[in-house]
Amino acid sequence: EPEVTQTPSHQVTQMGQEVILRCVPISNHLYFYWYRQILGQKVEFLVSFYNNEISEKSEIFDDQFSVERPDGSNFTLKIRSTKLEDSAMYFCASSEAQGDTQYFGPGTRLTVL
Amino acid sequence: ILNVEQSPQSLHVQEGDSTNFTCSFPSSNFYALHWYRWETAKSPEALFVMTLNGDEKKKGRISATLNTKEGYSYLYIKGSQPEDSATYLCAFDDNYGQNFVFGPGTRLSVLP
Image 1 (cartoon, each protein chain N blue to C red):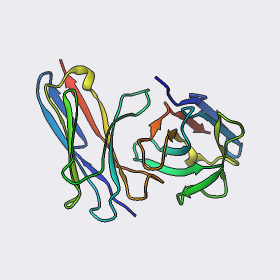
Image 2 (cartoon, rainbow over the protein chains, first blue to last red; image 1 turned 60 degrees about the vertical axis):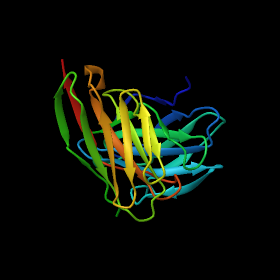
Image 3 (cartoon, rainbow over the protein chains, first blue to last red; image 1 turned 180 degrees about the vertical axis):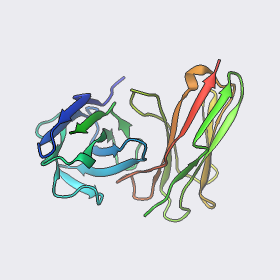
């Protein structure tokens, strides 16, 4: 069964460093999403992406964040200058059409020291 | 800010017991309600997407109902098994799938 994959599973970085989290959505899906979950808190929406542009973003998704679909398979989340409070589990999701079930990857745990 | 709540926060049941938990969400601007099952160290697994008031969905021993007028959905598990142990998340969609608002989850532990 097709699935969303994410790499790395765990990333440790120093405050101020840039990180890129990678996702490979399900191949025939057209809508892509990033969510995060800070330990002990709810899963929070960050951004949705369709047709090579951001379609919706939350207040969390400020200028430090960017997303890109650099080729036909990868979908990346970049954090330019990480802060301690960026430590969280980051989930990528994809869906075939708008409003459809979103299928989630296993997440990348980001730890900012 | 949309508020999606789930209760109880955690639940311990014996194998064979049936159980249910609740997701409550705003009753205005409803588009869909999604249920996910999330085992530790795995991807959240989609269980149901519910769109119509009065919807009932079933998948094996798990079923869900939806009341959009009063803003709640119930998830039922009949004859719980240890492999049902997971966190059950509901996600509210008021924006045609643009973004989901998740509840905090109900953590279910089924004791053998």
